[in-house]
Length: 119
Image 1 (cartoon, one colour):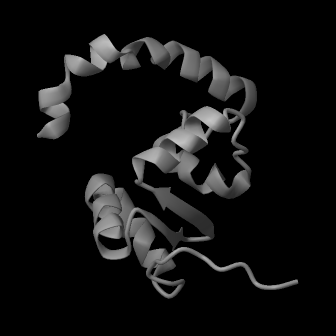
Image 2 (cartoon, one colour):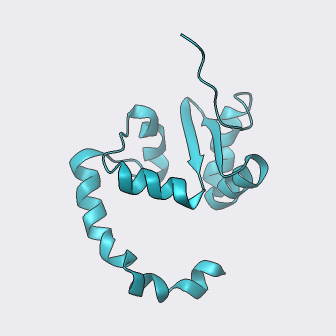
């Protein structure tokens, strides 16, 4: 079987350092990954493999066309940091959480927060 090509990223050499960088400042770490490697990138945090998708159309594709996007144990390593949320949960738990948060993302509600989002 041919080896699958990964998106750009920092490689595996710093995976344990990424744990500390990620927990110290998640937003800055993820923004740096996007700046350095593009809208679709790959990195490791400890034993976990992370695919970061920042391209809006691809995010839409994952969230809308693949509503049952599988969350395997690849997100388990994030649970101590992020908890049992939309990013880390799957199946019934994910569907229940998504339906609870959905009202916050109606066009009217998002419009109320545009200035904050832009800032």
